[in-house]
Image 1 (tube, rainbow, N blue to C red):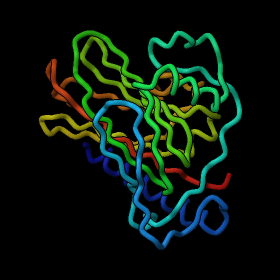
Image 2 (cartoon, helix red, strand yellow):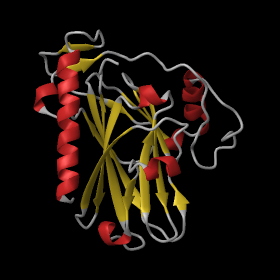
Image 3 (cartoon, rainbow, N blue to C red):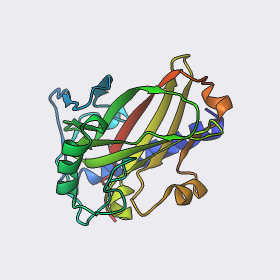
Image 4 (spheres, rainbow, N blue to C red):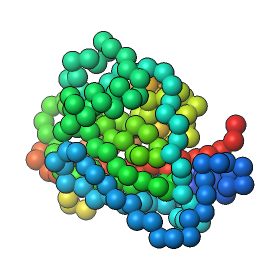
Length: 238
């Protein structure tokens, strides 16, 4: 990770912590939790994973987040090869049912009570050709998210996270994506979740897609890698 990326990530973390600490006095969704509250998870897929609450800083590690309201509106399922993709929009409650019934192998559900959540998606395989490896996951107190992963024909890897909701709501979720290869390479990228209307091209132009070129990921065909995802809710008051 370059010096500029380190400084950017640290500034982003500082701004989020500042917003959270200020919001403690005004936001009804936040409260201080003085007891140890370990997070449990329930994964509906067969993918090996490690899950834990992962605060961005010790300053906010004891802050609990109550369940956020389900965002209004209707949205497409964006999982690759979904027969309803771009054909039928669904409310979030219906999408939850759709994912559970139609895509159980690509859908994970996790329980969480904290303002920050971490999950490691493991056992991705670097393959020849162009592929899309989307995953859906639901965090109990935050909502639905999509992990969008592209392997391009030129061996680049693109990754970003989508939150089915408005641009304003999506921007309140800070996402840290860490690439971890089996040969020990680690790369970190920080951005906010994208709304469905913000497509990859729009996000790329604004530097909000995690782009790994062949030299930076160092993978050869058949190598496995993991993606560690940390989602932190920023309760800033607009």
